[in-house]
Length: 476
Image 1 (tube, one colour):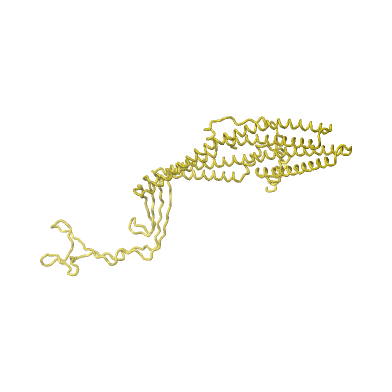
Image 2 (image 1 turned 180 degrees about the vertical axis):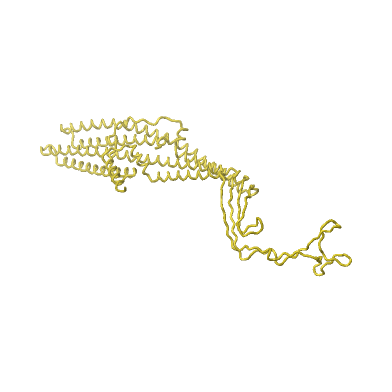
């Protein structure tokens, strides 16, 4: 199986090397392979479990507790044999009378030492009869607790858990937007450097053709050695520039591959390596700012944070309210005293209710509640401030896009003029009315015009992507 997966991976990478990859594919690979996004997905899963845990608080909880205790001594309720006076029924008084010693005159006789009456009969309870073996005690209980009213804390916990899940999703979406934007920047950088490499190669060929012409003129005696050296210096500079662009292109391809989660040496041929119709790109349509606020994931993070803080307010407020719960239990022990003292397990059911009413805590709970409200208010102010910044950000993005469009239109005009200037310079040089420096100057201006046009085209693409991002439309 490992060999099969490895073969599939190799074939996939080979396919990437031969097939052109679109911008959408790069975005998809980056989002799918990014470890930070995977971590955010796990955070969402964790929030879902917390939500389920909070929902379970509405249901009764069943617990078991068990105890074993070894006692050194047994329990003796009597220190010595107990002697209890007895009573007999007196027919004359129709009542029970104590059996006490009476004198000849019928008067009850008292004990001189204790001052109590002397019984004539006693019932003896032996000390051993009131001694119980408590050396080994086992006890246990099954308890069921059903919350009835917990001051709104269970509801608050469920709300907080629900908002936590939404917060985790908003953080994942915001992170995805940033990754998509980074991929777009890397993608269009590769396109830009690919175009500039082609331009650099054309410039090298252009200067090389001039060197060939100057060398031929030198052999005919109509050019100087200095002219040839000037052209050769310019040719070397063009070759150095081509090498730098080529190295930059290789590095930018590596950076794009790394963002896509591929080996850095993976070669990808991009679908848009021939820039076309960049000037026809349209800005995002005007939308209501409230719609933008609803789509922006960074604002959604703050909103869910506010909701969680509001839930914390209710949670703290619940500390100041009464709490009622229904309790049922089955308790058992060995030994048990349900039906006398018995050395075996015995138990029974019990049902009841518990209520807790906070009375006075020196303002601690109330101050915590006020602190929670202040935290919520601070977060709301942060949201308002961020919304104002988003509005400014949207305006700046639109201005930047318009500026990029105008810049592109100007570079197209400049390139037309540079093409004509180069053509005229080459004709004038061949006719002998212009010098080598004039031609090199025209070639340099032609190179700069083409480079500016490429930058303007890429600028339009990036401004369009950035505008989508600030409008909240870049959710992938």
